[in-house]
Image (cartoon, rainbow, N blue to C red):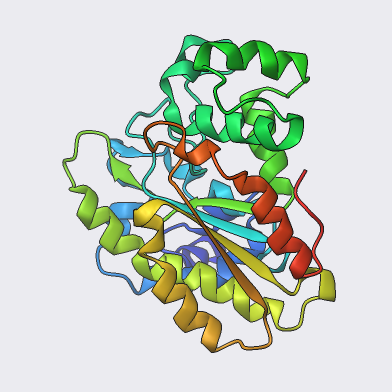
Length: 271
């Protein structure tokens, strides 16, 4: 009887997807997801295996922190269209496990994010070539890719794709995935702003870093929700997408700007 009741209360079996740290998010997102048309197609237990990331990683980006502990929100676009690459965390490609792996050279987003981090933290030149990055990362004792992204998340930087899924073969068009997840992205932002109204002062504010035109398409939604929570201070930092051509993402010391915005909010900087 208990298992039948549990199944009736959670027909999409969402609870298992939030285990491992994401439990505070379940009551906030479950009602939203269950109301969406075709929810079983995108997030149900029987969803097509051509949809990435693997189902248990769908909400991986949210698990390191409850809503009030996120200090910076960065929206990606969609997961990488490969099972081995898609992690449920925006920008993080898990197809390689060391900075010296050839795959790192091919992943423009991750390569430029790490280059910008070294520019900010260690004052390397913006002219540093992709081939020069792995030795510099080793020289400065930068942890491996998975550990680096986990450290960023644990410090309160939410790296979440606007669409939490995509089909590796486009059997479901990307636009359909994006459309499905739009209400969930709004619910995530609404939850963060809502709980921050009563959060401790050091957790009260939030910075939205807009990386590229696609991400900036969500800004009007954030501003609309922010207007409902005027006691929550919000800062916006615009920048290029990490995969932008040339050196655009690495110019302007974006991470310094981000930490300056956090300082304005009385929040600790991201290391």
